[in-house]
Image 1 (cartoon, one colour):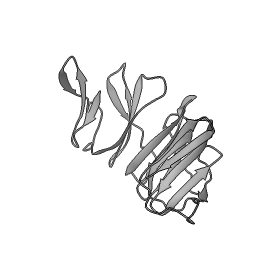
Image 2 (cartoon, rainbow, N blue to C red):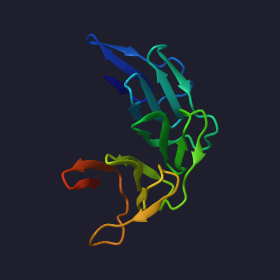
Image 3 (cartoon, rainbow, N blue to C red):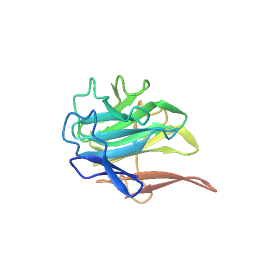
Length: 178
């Protein structure tokens, strides 16, 4: 179990909390903490950048090189590659990496807003990604490189979406938005 208390990251082991801040230069202010597929490493998104935690070295490494907007809201990994990930930024849109965060590339074409609150993958098609933005929802069929704004039955678009979650069902993918 790992918890952020806004100024530090802590790990619970044997009923004792231990700080895990080694390698983080700025105040933590965690906005997203995700386990990398494979279960051995973590990615921390914060207002100060993106960090990768190597569980074997017990050290955070800054992966913010080339990022202009450091305010990350969400991270979304490709289920078959720990090197591929998408970042949703507060005012910076979507960035993608194919090399584990060494470099990041802007992927905003078609997004309804640059304030991305949540990203998720379609469990039936990992190259299909959904984005919840402050002014609507978007879908990508090319692993987050380009986006198309999507609506909902009965309304043209859904504004102020805070999260999006895709789940598998007997009839296909079910998209939950709130």
